[in-house]
Amino acid sequence: MTPLTILRYPDPRLRTIARPVAAFDARLRKLANAMLETMYEAAGIGLAATQVDVHERLIVIDVSETRDQPLVLINPEIIWASDETRVGEEGCLSVPGIYDGVERSVAVKVRALDLDGKHQLHDTEGMLAVCIQHEMDHLVGKVFVEYLSPLKRKRIKTKMIKQIKDELA
Ligand code: GNR
Ligand code: NI
Image (tube, rainbow, N blue to C red; front, top):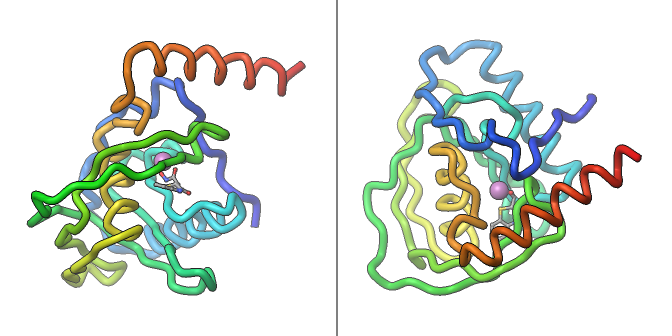
């Protein structure tokens, strides 16, 4: 399968707010599978539909070492987040080569639908909790660099634009 194209920061399409998924059909299943393949191919631990220019509330995740525990979360909602937070190093497939600290809740409870439209509850902590928060930000048009200082963000933006130019040259 040809992987989907991942939008690169500062592409303005990354700022789009996703709509809820409405139809649990074959097309949704195909999209989720294509996103999982794209995530595995790019060696990421998560991918939001926003990043492949599909503006629906769908994320895929696999934080397992063995890369064989895919999760598909549709219309996810954080129903509880711990007051306890931690700053952890984050990266993003849409901002390749950039890593910096972001403060997140250490644990979150998430309600979501699966590909059959059934409710699931995920009681998460650690890397999975961080990844879910990172992916859900994408669905509201937010990239992790927006948590950094304006100066850092400006430098990252310049670097990304140059990187994309150099690749085309
Ligand atoms: O692959 C990814 N690694 C990662 C590391 C720390 C915190 C969040 C992430 S998510 C990222 C994949 C990605 O960009 N998902 O949107
Ligand atoms: Ni990301």
